[in-house]
Image (spheres, rainbow, N blue to C red):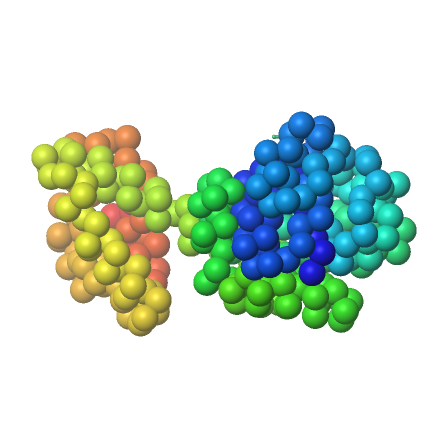
Length: 271
Ligand SMILES: NC(=O)c1ccc[n+]([C@@H]2O[C@H](COP(=O)([O-])OP(=O)(O)OC[C@H]3O[C@@H](n4cnc5c(N)ncnc54)[C@H](OP(=O)(O)O)[C@@H]3O)[C@@H](O)[C@H]2O)c1
């Protein structure tokens, strides 16, 4: 597949490196300037281009700029798109219609959202194989192309309807970001107890495995799941004394646990 990537950042870099490693022909990397695209382009043997320059022929244009810049960049690409018939963005949140300027000039448009954290191009490229990717494409030809691309990168493809993007993105944030908040809270409470945070690693890793093996509701252990309400009450008192800045968050987590264990009514007075 001949691919052009617009946006030499984290996601664009990860996809370009992974595509190159999977023997795709990355024909061009497009940055704000040629210089901005040069480093990544050199690594994948592509032509560095400034946005607005006419693009070389390719099977797929991947637009990997920040969500808020997608509409403007799609407009900038219209006079440059040349012989390219297919374009995707890689945002989880933005609707496909953000690429409407390209749609208007006959380019098939869709989305290819890797459900993975891509902190930089190299780490991201390593994490794409095995990750899942949300495809949005009403056109069957574009859809088939995206399925092919996903498979070649070792990714598991699934279809995402445009109208579900916001709730899908909220789910992704819950999966990726909320555990970070819970662990930051745990780190501070362990510190207050004089216990190294590293001691929790086997525990946390086992919990994540259990959640995906058993499902969150079955995997849940601990005092809320057991209905040991006095223990929960003493935990809340301890947090209020040792780390009062975390009290509200701790209560919110207890409320969430009570909800999934069907015990919300038992905590009405406490929360
Ligand atoms: N990173 C992730 O974990 C991840 C995962 C899945 C999906 N995504 C999606 O990937 C997209 C990009 O996010 P990111 O994290 O890769 O952001 P990023 O690292 O900031 O990369 C965006 C790149 O686009 C460039 N750019 C901006 N405007 C441009 C223009 N007019 N022409 C050419 N290049 C332009 C930026 O250059 P400057 O630095 O000069 O602005 C930067 O190199 C977003 O839609 C995001 O939702 C990201």
